[in-house]
Image (cartoon, rainbow, N blue to C red; front, side, top):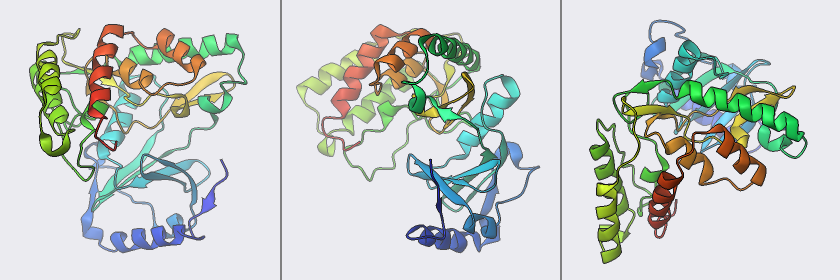
Length: 308
């Protein structure tokens, strides 16, 4: 992807905004795992010379040096940095190395290593079937490895709210309502019912919602001994970096956290369009087909009125 200097055109205003919020040095809060080390921020002069190389979910990705990128924006949360640090410490999953991570006011900053290669999305049509099978096997091994990370709650790794897509369909698109953490599956299901209610104009219930609510509350999903299973939550070919026929990195962990066992399969498959990628999902991610059908019905119902 060809980058754009932040000093050109409309991006200049973004630099100005960053300069304004960075002026108050007392407003910097480093992520918990780095609170006693790597207490550095990216200098404004380095930001001015950075190159914009992409946008992810409302945040910007800037290349600030030959080997580092900065993810910055209001939606950049420190739980993403904590997830990357946890994966680097506990697994062999190839993820970007976090150099520093902090918030300044409402803006989040994560400086991390740049992963070299091409996205799987950009080379799905170019890679041979044999290479795709090898990549799928690699992906399966990484998915199974990060699923070994478990916890006693459902939410982000630092104990924050649950980031499942099922909680992101408010009728009021300005809503900042958060759900979780949840410490039982019953709490989770009641959270889903509340999210269903708030996906309707003014929270009005109809007979169909009452029937769906009853099915949600009586639903039983396969669960492990530990309630929460580590989940990427946004796994798609654009987040898998390939180099020399192998997975070089898995990126964009902003939706990650401890979730129900079927979430990874559901989150990947609900937006999958490419037949090759759909085949890779089925071979690389533990399949929860019945759970998928149930959560997909709820997801589709929530989107009737929601702009999301």
